[in-house]
Image (cartoon, rainbow, N blue to C red):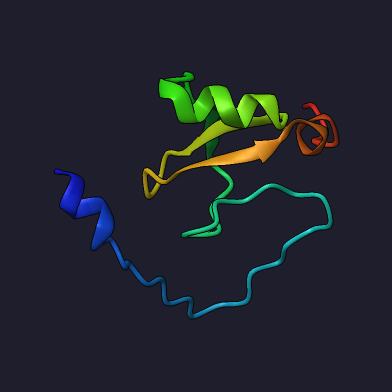
Length: 78
């Protein structure tokens, strides 16, 4: 299972223009906006929390990544 993550070299091909607004948080893999908070797990999350980075998860491509807390405060609430 760990080997899968080492060899995960997925490429995304986009056939249309992506309109990214300043300050908008998107998935680094698929540029999707369907992001949800991810529960902290392991020592890496504890270390990243020390640097004020919180885990997020893309529902489309299942990529887990970290976002700076200050970036989250800039997101407009519906």
